[in-house]
Structure formats: C-alpha cells, structure tokens
Amino acid sequence: MKLSVLDLCPMLSGQTATESFRHISILAQRVEAMGYHRFWMAEHHNMEGIGSSAPEVLIAHVAQATKTIRVGSGGIMLPNHAALHMAEVFRTLEALYPGRIDFGLGRAPGSGSKAMRALRADRGLEADFFPKQVDQLLHWLNDEMPEAHAGVQAVPMGVGMPQLWLLGSSDFGAMMAAKLGLPYAFAQHFSQIPALDVLHLYHDHFSPSRWLKKPLASMGVHIICADTDAQAEELAMSSDLQFSLFLGSGKSIPLPSVAEAKAYPYTAEDWRQVRAGSMPKFIGSPETIKRRLTPFVKSNLIDELMILTMVHDQKARAHSYELVSQIKW
Image 1 (cartoon, rainbow, N blue to C red):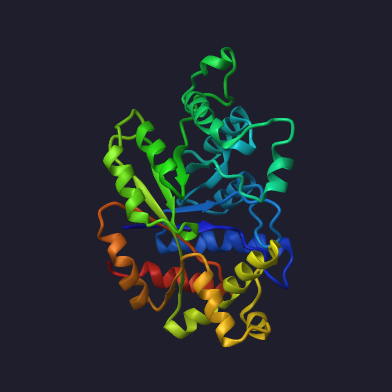
Image 2 (image 1 turned 90 degrees about the vertical axis):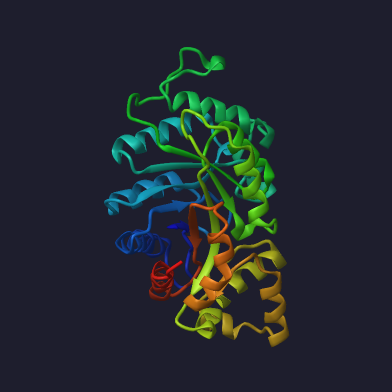
C-alpha cells in the first residue's frame, strides 16, 4: 500500500502566512525521506484557515524543495479556470520537474457560493461543463488540439504528460474516471458516502485507455496518529474546533493550537457533539489506525492512501506521518 500526503496548507494560529508556507516544504522533505509517494495540495478559496488558494504556485515551491516525491494538485477545481491555461501551467511544471508532476482535477468550486461567483464571473461555467473541459485537457496534454479549438496548442509542447487524476466524493467522479480510463481519487475525508461502494463502481465500470490499462485508485483519509489514543484525540481538538466554528458561522479561522482549543468554552458534551458531527477522521495510536483502516487496505480496491493530517504542532504532525509510515499492513 502506497502512502501519500494531501496538504490543505493550513494557516496556523499565531503564525504568519510566510511561516505557515515554510512548514509545507519542510513537511514535504520529511515525508519524502519516510518514503511517501506523492505530495498533493488542494485548491480552496475564501478560507482564512486554508492557504492553498493557488496550488499550482505551491506545487512549484514543494517540487523545488524535494528530489523524488511526486508533487501535484489534489485538486485543481477545473470549472474555476480556463482549460487551456491549466494545461499550460501543468505542462510548464512537467517541463521543470520531469516525471514528478500529478494533475488532479475536481469539479467543485473549492469555496462557498460567493467566492464561486467571483471566480467564475463573466464565464458562466457550471459543473456540467466539466466533462468538456477534461476532454480539452486530454487533447492539449497530449500535444493534440481539441476540435472546438483547432489551431490552438498548449505550450510548452513535447514535454510529456503529467499524470492526470479525477477526484470525487460521489459516484459521478468514479463513473467518469472509469469511462475515460483515468486514475480516480475518492475524498473519504469529507464524504459521508461509503468509500468502498464508490470504489467498487470505479473498478466494475473501468475501461482501459491509452493512459491507463487497469484501475488505479487512491482514497483520501484524515488521519491523526500519536503514540497513544489519548494524545491523538488531544491533537485532533484543533481541527475539530476549526471545523465546528466553520459550520456554525461559515467563517474559516486559522488552525488553533491545542491550548486554544482547550481554552474554548465548550463543555465535555459540546466536544462530544463536535467530534460526532465532524468530517470522517481516523484518530488514535498506530494500532488503532491500523485496525480501523485494515478493511479498506484489504479490500483490493485501493492502491494508495492519500493522508491529510490537520495538526497545529508541526513536530506532532510530522510524527503522525512517521507513525503511519511504520504500520505493517
């Protein structure tokens, strides 16, 4: 089972954006040394606590700081962009870092409705335009021209194709990836839909293509691992509080420290309800993480775990990834 990292580039309470971004390259170097396979960043907008509003810039930042780990988007929210420009961006990245660039695509806005309207102003593109955009990308990334844009090439040319992934949190993305014969990444970390049901659909309907001969699937999971269950649950208070306040007010705050979370005026029952209403997480010691994830790992439907770890303390965050890397499946 390959292990990879999904980074939302958290903006940390008490630190500047520059300091928070510095942690990204340091973490990438650490997980590269641990043997992690990929390092992805996801596009989000209008969220004070998430710094990945321009993942293509951060991909270059991380790729420059590392040597072997694959670096990419998990994902670029394609309806926010012109397909030609994104083809050119990722061809440029592939030329700069040959054989190391992944291009993960999603169709959600990566934001609320207000930011979506600002991003797509004067364009009028809705999510149902997504399949046409993907078709255009597949042409441009292969030194071909889409029928609707004859005479338009994606430059630079002849640089090889970044690995294209479709992302999703429902059966739509799974079926589209299967039909096109592309790798598929399921976002279990923010989906309440059972992952194995969706991944079965992808495998059952997969059609081999010139890009991929057999299914290739990853699953995004939010893991917070520590030496003990109690330590992991304490570390998780930061992201629990951040998510709880986002649900309550719609405002994304910088990721609070554990001390700030403990000082927040929640009762024990409040914290229980926060944890129950939070997005799916795998929290605990290595033994607990292994026990909870084994059904997924043994399903033969997943080739890779794409691990998100939202922890304020960066030493504890790196330690979480290290502990997971040492689990014997």
